[in-house]
Length: 459
Ligand code: FAD
Image (cartoon, rainbow, N blue to C red; front, top):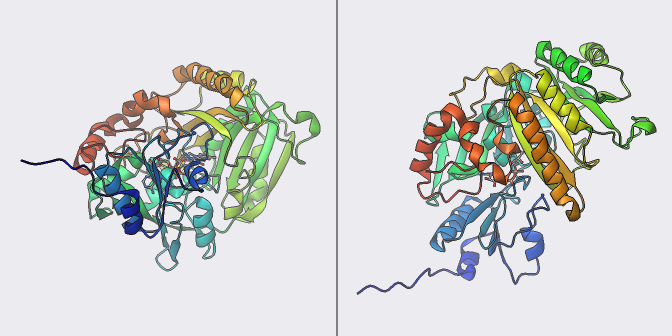
């Protein structure tokens, strides 16, 4: 006769197996350990493992499986959907794994899975090199790259995932697998856009490009559909060294914007030109052509600096609820929806950001990586960001109404990294023709759906 004794390990034996820290509810640091960037997700995990190496991650994944604990993975902690935490489950926190090793001769860098773009940009800038990353320095390289990765260098060098050349992944079995185009190519294909579905990337290796200083900042205009139309015309024909994100927001209380515009709806071109300084004037001329400039902050700065300009406005602890859609071109209907909701932006922290994803992002075919929307020209992200939990219902309702108004004028899918928890019904269309292949890879590497706290591809 066999008897079932249940799991043999306890948090204490897990503590013995990891070099990092294992935090449970009775620990004085529990509240700090369980906190994520988006205050909307106030969850109480059973265990948080602050891993320091691949071995810790392997032990944590095995422990979660043995105890049938839901498993959340957290790098930079920026998941707006709150996927980096879970009630009564185990969180693998990678924020102590942030090393970046640059090989300047090969123009590559390998970073640990918990590094932020601030860590990465700092390390590569020392060698005059960079790759496409997020526009806020505190965002994690892990979540951003695995979902795709849009930023200031995307038109010139492609998405972050297009620059990924290899990864070391802890699988659902708790094993370590190294993948690239030759080793486990199916897994490597799925990682480039398929999100956190396939395992924990404990290190990611990237191709780098020569980028030192850039000319960038904000040019502000009154909120007006004509500015949006002119911006589209400008960016579509602009050289790929020029990136410009169209932002709709309430005028920030900044010295470069006259006081009468503070708190009033505006459009802004958040621009980064990585071409030669001699052409900066041409960039200004393009921006002048978009409409009446009501305020401007544009200067030459080191590439890492442009990715910190909004760090202070977006500290951890705010409440966020976002949505995202892709589009080919920017139709009059889409512009009208943006203008309507741009005029009723609920707070100074809220914004809409329309990222151009043409240029080098279109070099890859729709099936070359898991990121399916290679025909999209723009990725729209929009949503409420607020400080008082009493405002949550209003902000969520506003974001949903905005999405309803915009959806008929955009493509069926959107960027998984801008989706919220209630967007699981869009996962199939977000991956389009790649969904079935992703499912096959999921079945091979995670048949029990251990990694399910994400925009989930069910095995
Ligand atoms: P986490 O919350 O740590 O992780 C999110 C999810 O990603 C995890 O639940 C897990 O499923 C997965 N994950 C993270 N790390 C790993 C890993 N090492 N291995 C396996 N899975 C992992 N997106 C853009 O493309 N461009 C931008 O410029 C941009 N700016 C942003 C600015 C802000 C302020 C915020 C909040 C988000 C922004 N995003 C941007 C969206 C961003 O890409 C996603 O929020 C992304 O999930 C953040 O990754 P993270 O590692 O910080 O988040």
